[in-house]
Length: 400
Ligand code: ADP
Ligand code: MG
Image (cartoon, rainbow, N blue to C red):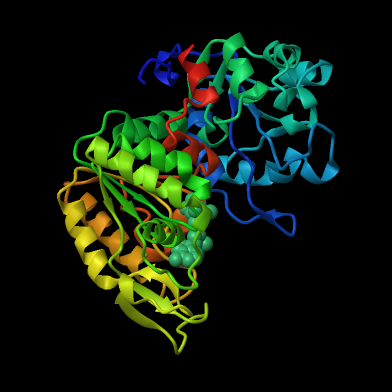
């Protein structure tokens, strides 16, 4: 894990050198303006460390899904102003990723200046990881830095190919993410608990299969818990449930048994007849008392308390997926309660807590504890693939 190079391995003076830096600038946009610049803030320490050392920095990123063609609605120049604002300095937009325009621009940049290259996905060689395309970009740089963990699950030219052609380094955000993830599942302090929730088992089969061999406690919540309950013969009524995955759920529970992993399923649940905020039909009951016209929409309060006690016995927690339909009140209660317990245990120093996933991050923010976890990953797909135990191509290439 620690076998990749970081910015610490670069010389103190980078004057005269050009750094090709892969960052995540795929900002959420509304009406032509970014609604959240967290991704730029994440890349800021790396960019400024390189410019402070005198390097000319060329930022390389994708923006949207232009599918290998120039597309004026997806140019990275749209986020130039946001990058300027976050970095506190003016950057130069360069409407190419290689060739004479890039060469001339590098000539204009002074030591410590920053250029923003065009959307690398405008060229088909990016996603096909075409070696000639990667060589064309690499020709402009003296070294390569990858600070975009969120794109590391793709073997693209800018995430993988370049790392094989130039001296390659992990940026600070990448380094922090890899350290946090390693502390959670690579070489974690034992015992380890995993919370896996969300809508469907089918989207997280590989996650569950990987985790049963690695953690002592597997806490299953959300819609996917219904599939496991049904597999155990519980009538889950109208709940979201993948009945065709009964065998799979049983196999996962068998594997957990063999591996000494305890699977925790809710024994009380919050149900309603219609999916709406605070419906009249709302009630809490034992899992064996769900009526045929009711849906399970959250884990019940007794189960949540018991799960909190499980976390108290653990040193490490990795969490992906909300325990209930947390966007609609009061089905956020279990997720909020367990998240707060985890945050308190983290603050008291007894738990290392790592979480990730688009809805999970939103749920932790909703619970007001996003800052209190040890590490919260902003990477959606890459985080899930890491939870599946996969070696991410962008990370593997940094190791050389
Ligand atoms: P993440 O984005 O963190 O990986 P998922 O996308 O897998 O999480 O799952 C989040 C979704 O699961 C949320 O929209 C939530 O409403 C839904 N969900 C959780 N529990 C239930 C449930 N019991 N019934 C229906 N949907 C649920
Ligand atoms: Mg999601």
